[in-house]
Image 1 (cartoon, one colour):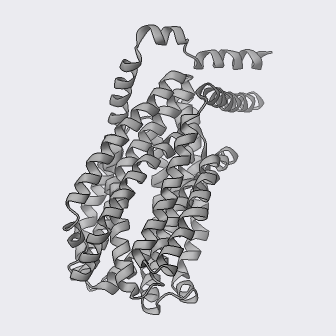
Image 2 (cartoon, rainbow, N blue to C red):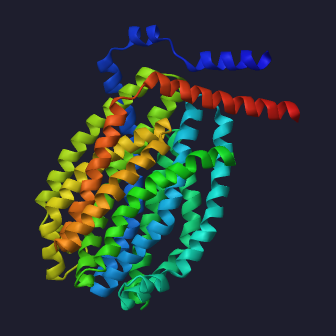
Image 3 (cartoon, helix red, strand yellow):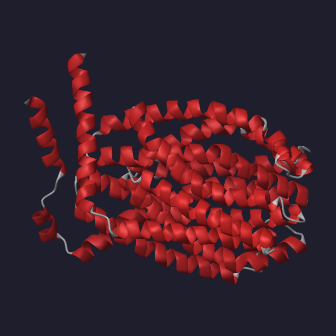
Length: 449
């Protein structure tokens, strides 16, 4: 009887009467207020994400002036490390956006700490098999037909990246801890401190040292689909680098596609920040039972994403003849990058829209659905189309990029349809049941003790 009363009181506390909400705020007031809230979260998150991407970009900018071999091998090493390690950890840590965000909205603060500790422990366990795979990566590349010279350099580079896996695992869990509570400034300061240290250290090692380019069950319930959701998308883009290594003149093709991929990854810091903002807002409001505010949060982030897409894609197209020089001083590479620039602009549009829709999915806990969407979009549509255009129709690197964008368009369309037809009352009810179940388990544990 006591448990039923507790659950009933909790459900009532999670719900805000619709009358009080509608009588105090108009839809426009809610929308403008939501834009401000998400802007407060998104702007620092963009800076945080950008600083993390710039660690890789700075490394590639440095080695790009050592020649095509250094640039292509470094790009492939970073891509493979992302595919086999960092993307898995990032995806699993995304489960905390659902769990911690909804717990914070429901004011169950103790659960947030428990989930963070559990996540760090689980992610550390995952790092060990990922490290073992990285040790033998150079040999595996030779077995699948990659250029032996590039493969050898890739193997050496990845081994030096392995210690970063464990630090990355803890960092991603802690990022979600701060993000779920809208505490962005600590992340901003620490990430830019790391970037400021990385630049002089990287410059010294490359040019001066002579080294050149060297709740466990509940968590896994969301972590595994989250990892699949992120990895399926991430792997499809990194697969382009591997496929480009099988084209004629692999050093040129790999160098150019790596420049395009680094550009789009750097610019994706903006939609990732917006996605993190809407994930936080949606999960918080669903945890608190505020259905209307969760819906308005989606409207606000779509508006912000459209504005961002127009500005960024126009700026990138205007500078298409210049940005290739950021990564290389070889005319052949720069000219090829210039011809790829319009396609990269289209990628910016797709990436912005799918980024915010993916954020909504994480906030609601739709990782399972999004994983199937990404599987179908990229591996039934994008990758086969890329292979046909790149190899059969001989469009080479340009064909590979067009094909993968077909997958991105399919992904964006499907996620947009799912978001449009969402029953927000049902999502709030699902979040309430999940939190009530967690509270009941904690109460039972306390009674037993």
